[in-house]
Structure formats: structure tokens, C-alpha cells
Amino acid sequence: MMTEFDPSAVRWVTSSYSGSNGGECVEVARVGRGFAARDSKCVGDGGPVAVFSAGPWRTFLRRAAAEFRS
Image (cartoon, rainbow, N blue to C red; front, top):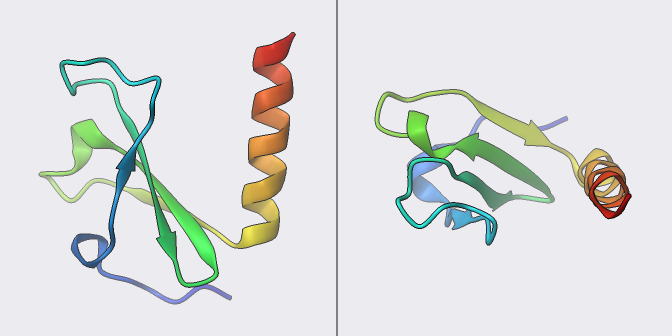
């Protein structure tokens, strides 16, 4: 089970597919043994953060990569 965390206390990395204007970005961060993802447009207003344990995160990445390859 994941515990709560402070989004300002982790190092967020912006997707390499994000636009250069910074308005359409997905950011991810390592959170303990899992990962968190957020929409950078919502950072200032304390927008939602999705937190995943390592297994579901790996599954998401594998399926997303397969979807974009086809």
C-alpha cells in the first residue's frame, strides 16, 4: 500500500514528448518503491497526482509502449 507524500518534496521529470511551451506535459516522479504521475498544467493549483506501485507502473509502460508502436 502506498502512503501519502508531499508532491513538492520529490523530483519531477517532464516527458520527452512534452511541448516546448510547457503547457502540455506529463511529469513523473519516483515515490518510494513506486511512481507518481501528474499533468503539469495542474501543478500550481494542487491538482491530482496518480500514484502507482512498481508492478502496475511497469504494466502501464509496457502497454503504452505497445500501443504507440502499432
